[in-house]
Amino acid sequence: MFKHFRESIFVTIFGFVAAYFWAEHMAVGTGLKMLFVTFFLAILEITLSFDNAVVNALILEKMAPKWQHRFLTWGILIAVFGMRFLFPVLIVSIFSNLSIIKTIHLALEDVSQYTHYLHIAHAPLVAFGGAFLMMVGLEYFFNENKNLWLKKFENFLLNLKTRFLDIIITVILIFGVQFFVNPPDRMHIVISGMAGILSYILIKQLCSFLEKKQEGLISDTTDGAFGANMAKNAAKGGFMMFMYLELIDASFSLDGVLGSFAISKDIIIITIGLAIGAMFVRSLTLVMVEMHTLKKYPYLSSGAHYAILTLAVIMFISTFYEVPEVVTGGLGLLFVGSSFFASIKENRRENKQEG
Image (cartoon, rainbow, N blue to C red; front, side, top):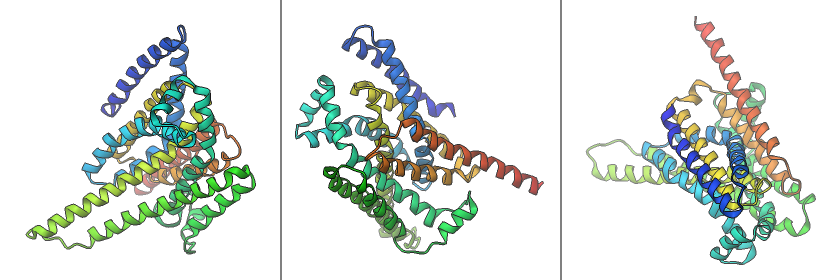
């Protein structure tokens, strides 16, 4: 198990050293203070993303080893450098009509102006993430849940046969927040929310199509054309699952990235702190996949998806009201922790029956 945390520990040590010297470079005597801020940001990221690790493990178990490796290498680079640094810069660049280079300069030299533009982009960003995650959670409880935790309630959800119910509920939430947000933000929120729904549908449909196409092929080791088609479909399917995981990770990270600016205004310190947290989330994902944690603790999937739905609702609320990160992280840990202990209890009960 420790081997999966070696890279995370290395990144933590390197990150703390870099944060200390960066802080001292910006203002002499602030190094120790910024180390504490970096540590707090890392804990915040781990707390907010623990359910993300469970969902990642759930999907990774279905992927070919090659694509698992790609997600855990290329994917972590995208997650750390892309979502924690470049993504906020890109968003500010769009909303401020500045070039990427000028925006990076703004982030380093004029933090107040940078955060002002990021605040303007907050509502549409969380609307996209909230809609995408709401679709992820609802799809699971309506169609994919195989280990019922809160049995009566989850069985009721599985028996709902209304078509497009997940889309209907998400659209209602998107238009529901219009009553609370400022009029100039309303159209941006609707467009972003609908983009979240469409992104989810597109990725899921492509994944489903490629999986069915691959399953429909008849095994024939003597047919070279068949082998080529099989490999081609597997590659396409793996790529779409990779993109699906990246979108889920992006949606999860929005809350932490945006909320981190309430803790620090220094984009370098924020990036280092969130990167350390993201690395430990990756390590947790690896442990869960290797130890088949989701099979040993069957209710964890339900707990994680309850946390996803909670995060999605909080994202919609945060379009007009700031929800403290401790509430978001606390509720996520509550659902995941409760499902974990419920799984232990269920495993003991089954062992007694078998004994």
